[in-house]
Length: 87
Image (cartoon, rainbow, N blue to C red; front, top):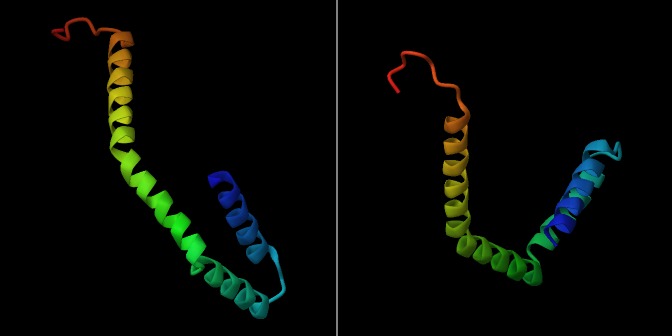
């Protein structure tokens, strides 16, 4: 679903930036987007997505930290030792 939303956003943005229809068309698009954004069904789905992200964020942060530490350790292990560096 996220990829569909991002595609539609990109499509709309590309159209607005690429069109030469002028200010009137821009205002029509802006009004349509505002109407969509304020739609109760859309707001409900946005709230659900926000809640999901808030719930998943701590786990994602933990996974990123663990993976980063592992990668840093691997880099340290592969780095050649400098002679006389005291290690």
